[in-house]
Image (cartoon, rainbow, N blue to C red; front, side):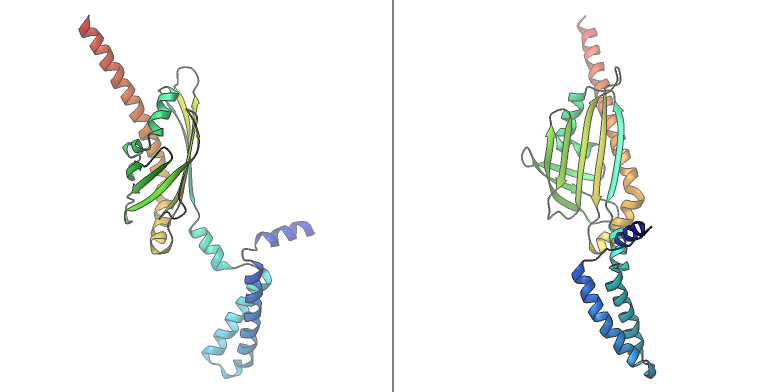
Length: 235
Protein backbone atom coordinates (compact mmCIF):
# COMPACT_ATOMS: atom_id res chain seq x y z
CA UNK A 1 0.00 0.00 0.00
CA UNK A 2 2.81 2.41 0.93
CA UNK A 3 4.74 1.60 -2.26
CA UNK A 4 1.66 2.29 -4.37
CA UNK A 5 1.12 5.61 -2.64
CA UNK A 6 4.75 6.58 -3.13
CA UNK A 7 4.53 5.73 -6.85
CA UNK A 8 1.39 7.84 -7.27
CA UNK A 9 3.01 10.76 -5.49
CA UNK A 10 6.18 10.55 -7.60
CA UNK A 11 4.15 10.32 -10.81
CA UNK A 12 2.57 13.70 -10.00
CA UNK A 13 5.94 15.46 -9.64
CA UNK A 14 6.63 17.48 -12.78
CA UNK A 15 9.06 20.21 -11.61
CA UNK A 16 12.67 20.00 -10.44
CA UNK A 17 14.09 20.24 -6.92
CA UNK A 18 15.36 23.81 -7.43
CA UNK A 19 11.92 24.95 -8.63
CA UNK A 20 10.33 23.31 -5.60
CA UNK A 21 12.76 25.02 -3.24
CA UNK A 22 12.22 28.47 -4.78
CA UNK A 23 8.44 27.96 -4.81
CA UNK A 24 8.51 26.96 -1.16
CA UNK A 25 10.58 29.98 -0.09
CA UNK A 26 8.57 32.56 -2.02
CA UNK A 27 5.29 30.82 -1.19
CA UNK A 28 6.00 30.97 2.53
CA UNK A 29 6.97 34.65 2.34
CA UNK A 30 3.91 35.64 0.29
CA UNK A 31 1.54 33.61 2.44
CA UNK A 32 2.90 35.13 5.65
CA UNK A 33 2.63 38.65 4.20
CA UNK A 34 -0.89 38.07 2.95
CA UNK A 35 -2.17 36.54 6.19
CA UNK A 36 -0.65 39.36 8.27
CA UNK A 37 -2.51 41.93 6.19
CA UNK A 38 -5.81 40.13 5.68
CA UNK A 39 -7.44 42.34 8.31
CA UNK A 40 -7.04 45.25 5.86
CA UNK A 41 -9.14 43.33 3.28
CA UNK A 42 -7.05 44.75 0.43
CA UNK A 43 -6.74 43.18 -2.99
CA UNK A 44 -3.00 42.87 -2.51
CA UNK A 45 -3.32 40.91 0.75
CA UNK A 46 -5.84 38.49 -0.81
CA UNK A 47 -3.69 37.95 -3.91
CA UNK A 48 -0.58 37.45 -1.75
CA UNK A 49 -2.41 34.85 0.32
CA UNK A 50 -3.67 32.98 -2.75
CA UNK A 51 -0.36 33.17 -4.62
CA UNK A 52 1.59 32.17 -1.52
CA UNK A 53 -0.71 29.21 -0.89
CA UNK A 54 -0.31 27.98 -4.47
CA UNK A 55 3.49 28.40 -4.50
CA UNK A 56 3.75 26.60 -1.16
CA UNK A 57 1.61 23.76 -2.51
CA UNK A 58 3.78 23.70 -5.64
CA UNK A 59 6.94 23.47 -3.56
CA UNK A 60 5.66 20.76 -1.22
CA UNK A 61 3.93 18.57 -3.82
CA UNK A 62 6.34 19.15 -6.73
CA UNK A 63 3.32 19.40 -9.02
CA UNK A 64 2.62 22.42 -11.23
CA UNK A 65 -0.74 22.56 -13.02
CA UNK A 66 0.57 25.12 -15.52
CA UNK A 67 3.46 22.84 -16.50
CA UNK A 68 1.07 19.92 -16.84
CA UNK A 69 -1.30 21.94 -19.05
CA UNK A 70 1.56 23.10 -21.25
CA UNK A 71 2.85 19.55 -21.63
CA UNK A 72 -0.56 18.28 -22.69
CA UNK A 73 -1.10 21.19 -25.03
CA UNK A 74 2.07 20.54 -26.97
CA UNK A 75 2.07 16.77 -26.80
CA UNK A 76 3.57 15.36 -30.01
CA UNK A 77 1.16 13.95 -32.57
CA UNK A 78 2.12 10.35 -33.39
CA UNK A 79 0.53 8.52 -36.30
CA UNK A 80 1.14 4.89 -37.23
CA UNK A 81 -0.25 3.20 -40.32
CA UNK A 82 0.34 -0.09 -42.13
CA UNK A 83 -0.74 -0.96 -45.66
CA UNK A 84 -0.17 -3.49 -48.46
CA UNK A 85 1.06 -2.24 -51.84
CA UNK A 86 0.86 -4.41 -54.94
CA UNK A 87 4.42 -3.59 -56.06
CA UNK A 88 7.85 -5.17 -55.40
CA UNK A 89 9.53 -4.13 -52.15
CA UNK A 90 12.70 -2.71 -53.76
CA UNK A 91 10.61 -0.59 -56.11
CA UNK A 92 8.43 0.72 -53.28
CA UNK A 93 11.52 1.52 -51.23
CA UNK A 94 13.28 3.38 -54.03
CA UNK A 95 10.30 5.60 -54.74
CA UNK A 96 9.99 6.60 -51.05
CA UNK A 97 13.76 6.89 -50.65
CA UNK A 98 13.78 9.58 -53.31
CA UNK A 99 12.53 12.15 -50.81
CA UNK A 100 11.69 14.62 -53.57
CA UNK A 101 8.84 12.22 -54.46
CA UNK A 102 7.10 12.74 -51.09
CA UNK A 103 5.03 15.80 -52.14
CA UNK A 104 3.50 13.66 -54.91
CA UNK A 105 1.41 11.84 -52.30
CA UNK A 106 1.88 13.89 -49.09
CA UNK A 107 -0.40 16.77 -49.93
CA UNK A 108 0.68 18.97 -46.99
CA UNK A 109 4.23 19.05 -48.41
CA UNK A 110 4.96 21.63 -51.08
CA UNK A 111 8.54 20.59 -51.75
CA UNK A 112 11.36 18.40 -50.50
CA UNK A 113 14.79 19.28 -51.84
CA UNK A 114 17.63 16.81 -51.29
CA UNK A 115 20.93 18.54 -50.51
CA UNK A 116 22.92 15.30 -50.45
CA UNK A 117 22.35 11.63 -49.62
CA UNK A 118 21.37 12.38 -46.01
CA UNK A 119 20.26 16.01 -45.76
CA UNK A 120 17.19 17.73 -47.20
CA UNK A 121 15.01 20.84 -46.93
CA UNK A 122 11.25 20.41 -46.45
CA UNK A 123 8.52 22.96 -47.17
CA UNK A 124 4.99 22.44 -45.89
CA UNK A 125 1.70 24.28 -45.94
CA UNK A 126 -0.92 23.42 -43.33
CA UNK A 127 -4.27 25.12 -43.63
CA UNK A 128 -4.49 28.02 -41.18
CA UNK A 129 -0.73 28.27 -40.65
CA UNK A 130 2.08 30.23 -42.30
CA UNK A 131 4.26 28.24 -44.71
CA UNK A 132 6.80 26.19 -42.78
CA UNK A 133 10.31 25.16 -43.78
CA UNK A 134 12.88 22.98 -42.01
CA UNK A 135 15.96 20.86 -42.58
CA UNK A 136 15.92 17.12 -41.98
CA UNK A 137 18.53 14.38 -41.75
CA UNK A 138 18.30 10.66 -42.49
CA UNK A 139 19.48 9.03 -39.26
CA UNK A 140 19.06 5.35 -40.09
CA UNK A 141 18.80 3.43 -43.34
CA UNK A 142 18.83 -0.21 -44.37
CA UNK A 143 18.64 -0.54 -48.13
CA UNK A 144 15.25 -1.83 -49.18
CA UNK A 145 14.08 -2.35 -45.59
CA UNK A 146 14.14 0.76 -43.40
CA UNK A 147 14.29 4.54 -43.61
CA UNK A 148 14.30 6.90 -40.62
CA UNK A 149 14.61 10.68 -40.64
CA UNK A 150 14.18 13.59 -38.25
CA UNK A 151 14.19 17.37 -38.41
CA UNK A 152 17.26 19.30 -37.29
CA UNK A 153 17.31 20.91 -33.82
CA UNK A 154 16.62 24.43 -35.09
CA UNK A 155 13.63 23.37 -37.22
CA UNK A 156 10.51 25.56 -37.15
CA UNK A 157 8.45 22.41 -36.63
CA UNK A 158 10.03 19.34 -35.06
CA UNK A 159 9.16 16.02 -36.67
CA UNK A 160 10.46 12.55 -37.37
CA UNK A 161 9.46 9.62 -39.52
CA UNK A 162 10.16 5.90 -39.84
CA UNK A 163 9.11 3.60 -42.67
CA UNK A 164 9.72 -0.15 -42.63
CA UNK A 165 9.38 -2.27 -45.79
CA UNK A 166 8.54 -5.99 -45.78
CA UNK A 167 7.81 -8.63 -48.40
CA UNK A 168 4.09 -9.27 -48.10
CA UNK A 169 2.58 -12.75 -48.35
CA UNK A 170 2.78 -14.25 -51.83
CA UNK A 171 0.82 -12.25 -54.33
CA UNK A 172 0.39 -9.15 -52.14
CA UNK A 173 3.56 -7.24 -53.00
CA UNK A 174 4.95 -5.12 -50.14
CA UNK A 175 3.83 -4.31 -46.63
CA UNK A 176 4.93 -0.94 -45.23
CA UNK A 177 4.71 0.32 -41.66
CA UNK A 178 4.76 4.10 -41.34
CA UNK A 179 5.25 6.12 -38.15
CA UNK A 180 5.33 9.92 -38.28
CA UNK A 181 5.68 12.25 -35.29
CA UNK A 182 5.08 16.01 -35.32
CA UNK A 183 5.58 18.49 -32.49
CA UNK A 184 3.54 21.67 -33.11
CA UNK A 185 5.65 24.84 -33.09
CA UNK A 186 5.61 26.99 -29.97
CA UNK A 187 3.92 30.33 -29.34
CA UNK A 188 0.70 31.52 -30.95
CA UNK A 189 1.36 29.42 -34.03
CA UNK A 190 1.71 26.41 -31.74
CA UNK A 191 -1.73 26.98 -30.24
CA UNK A 192 -3.33 26.88 -33.67
CA UNK A 193 -1.12 24.01 -34.80
CA UNK A 194 -1.89 21.86 -31.77
CA UNK A 195 -5.60 22.23 -32.35
CA UNK A 196 -5.21 21.60 -36.07
CA UNK A 197 -2.98 18.56 -35.65
CA UNK A 198 -5.13 16.99 -32.95
CA UNK A 199 -8.21 17.22 -35.16
CA UNK A 200 -6.84 16.63 -38.65
CA UNK A 201 -3.33 15.25 -38.70
CA UNK A 202 -4.19 11.60 -38.23
CA UNK A 203 -6.56 11.75 -41.21
CA UNK A 204 -3.97 13.60 -43.30
CA UNK A 205 -1.26 10.98 -42.73
CA UNK A 206 -3.60 8.07 -43.39
CA UNK A 207 -4.67 9.72 -46.64
CA UNK A 208 -1.00 10.26 -47.55
CA UNK A 209 -0.20 6.58 -47.06
CA UNK A 210 -3.25 5.58 -49.10
CA UNK A 211 -2.21 8.05 -51.83
CA UNK A 212 1.21 6.38 -51.91
CA UNK A 213 -0.39 2.97 -52.39
CA UNK A 214 -2.64 4.26 -55.18
CA UNK A 215 0.26 6.04 -56.89
CA UNK A 216 2.52 2.98 -56.80
CA UNK A 217 -0.16 0.60 -58.04
CA UNK A 218 -1.37 2.99 -60.74
CA UNK A 219 2.18 3.45 -62.03
CA UNK A 220 2.69 -0.29 -62.11
CA UNK A 221 -0.57 -0.85 -63.95
CA UNK A 222 0.29 1.91 -66.46
CA UNK A 223 3.77 0.47 -67.06
CA UNK A 224 2.36 -3.03 -67.53
CA UNK A 225 -0.28 -1.72 -69.94
CA UNK A 226 2.28 0.19 -72.02
CA UNK A 227 4.55 -2.88 -72.22
CA UNK A 228 1.65 -5.13 -73.21
CA UNK A 229 0.35 -2.62 -75.78
CA UNK A 230 3.83 -2.19 -77.29
CA UNK A 231 4.33 -5.96 -77.55
CA UNK A 232 0.95 -6.34 -79.33
CA UNK A 233 1.82 -3.65 -81.88
CA UNK A 234 5.17 -5.32 -82.64
CA UNK A 235 3.45 -8.62 -83.29
